[in-house]
Image 1 (cartoon, helix red, strand yellow):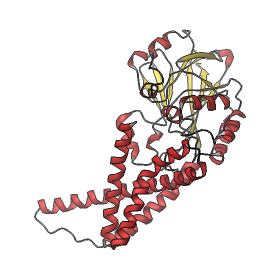
Image 2 (image 1 turned 180 degrees about the horizontal axis):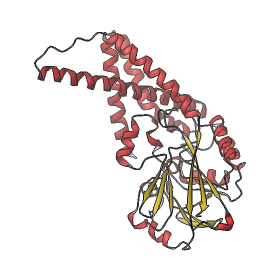
Image 3 (image 1 turned 180 degrees about the vertical axis):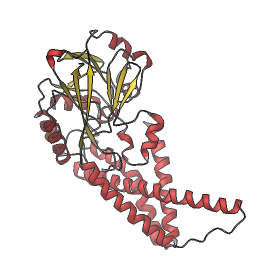
Image 4 (image 1 turned 90 degrees about the vertical axis):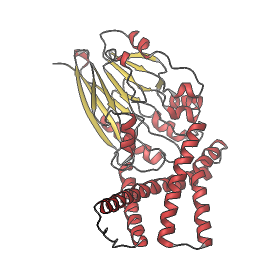
Length: 378
C-alpha cells in the first residue's frame, strides 16, 4: 500500500507540475494567482487520500463531494497532459529534425495562450463524451460450442459483470441501468469477476437490495477482486452475500452441468488475508468431462492450468478506461479486451468492465455486460 501511495503521489504530482507550467506559460499569472493555483493543485493531489479517510470516518456527504470533484479533476488533468504532451513531443521532434537538417524551423502560428485554450476546449469535449460513453452500457455477446455442454440442457447463458466499483460515484442510477441490461439478456447464471465494490460499504444498502432482486434461474456467483480487499474483505463479503451472490474463494461448484471455479485475487496475499493456493490443484479436483469456467479477476495466465479449464472469465484492466491508457494495460496484460483469446485448448475472455474507477468517464473503452452462450457442439 505504501508503494502504491508513493507511485501515485509521484506520478500525479508530476502531472500537476506539467500542467502548472503550461498555465504559467499561457497566462503569466501574478504572485497571488500563482499561490492560489498551487494551493488548488495540492488539494487535488491529496483529495483522493482524504476521501478514503472521510469514508472510513463515516462522513459520507463530504466524501461524495470530494470524490466527485477530485476524480473529475483527475480525468480532466490526464486528458490535458496526454493531449498537451503529445503536442510537445511532436513539436520537439519537428524542431530536432529542422536542426539536424540545418534549416530554420517553422514559427508557431498560435500563442501559448491560444494553444492552451484550444487544448482545454478539446479536453472538455472529450470529457463530455466520456460521461456519455460510461453511462451507455452495451451487451457484448459471444457463443461457444462445446461437446462438454449436455445436449439435454440446451443453451446455458452466462452474464458476466466485472469492475462495477459500486461506491460513492457508481450509485443507484448507474446500477439501475446495468441491471436493466442484465434483465434484458435473461441469463441463466450471473457472475461477477471481481471489484463489485469500490471503497467503504456502509452506504450501499439500497444497492445490495437492487442486486438481490436479480434472480437468474441457476443463481449468481462472485469472486474477489483487489478492491474487495481495499474496501475491507469482511464488509465486501457481507455486501456480496446480501446482494444474493455465492462467493467462491478457491472453490468450485456444479451448476447446470458445468463446473464454475473461482479463485481469490492475488491481493489476498498482499493484504494479509490469506495466501494464494494452487489453482492447478483446484482445477484438477473438479469433475472431469464437464465444461469448466474459471473465474479469475486478473487476466493472468497460469501455464500449468491450461487444458484444465475451458473458459476463463476475467476483468481488472477496464481496457484502460480512458484512451490512451489501454496502451499501458496492454503492456502488463497483452490479452485484448472484448474478444476471445485462444490459449492452447482453453479460452480466455477479458471484459472491458461494467463501471468506472476514479474519473466517472470512459473514452474509447466502452463498458460492457458480457453475454456468453454455451451451446452443445453439433
